[in-house]
Amino acid sequence: MLKNWVVVPTCLPLVLRRCHACASGHFRASGKFRVNANHKLIDAWLLALCTACGETTKLTVLERMNVRSVRPELLDRLHDNDPGLTAELLQDPAVRRRNRIALDWDNAWRLDIGGTDHLDRELIREVIDVSVRFAARIPVRPVRLIAEGCGLSRAEVERLVTEGKLVSAARLSGKLSGDFTFMLKR
Image (tube, rainbow, N blue to C red; front, side, top):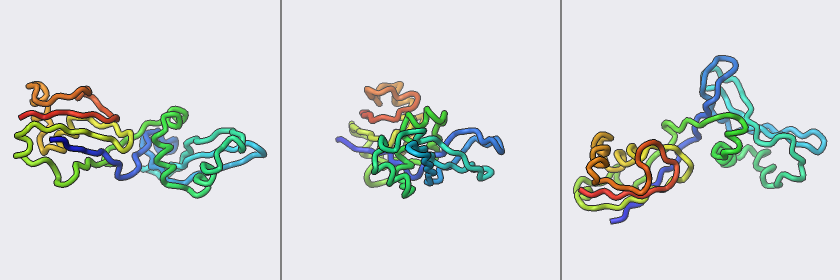
């Protein structure tokens, strides 16, 4: 029996960056952009607010780019403070690398298994194949996903892995942010 699970974001993740005012380590993306043009060059920043003191920091999106080289749709989205663009830019590895930030996805995602809260115990007695798809690049431990989706404890999932009853081509230790499949045999 094949089941499809989807890991979906519920809100924007926190930005991990040290605040220069209060030394807090978390910022929340405000969804607002600041665009500045100087003759033919344009700069754009995503604004983020410190979760502790409310201080604003700017995350560089465009830096000293020729206005003609920027797509008009992107400029419109920047001027309109498009929330979808905020999510896209936070996912962009180039933006994260340029600004030296990381993302904290704790409590910012959910597992959609299509129906009930977790698989029925009777269903787990059979062999099931599960395909897990990520709607965004959210680093999550596969053991945690499997435990949550099947209604098992993480220790029980670890035991099933060591006994060979839970198999996957993907590495189940550590964190994954890409699609994977697993098979559970009981």
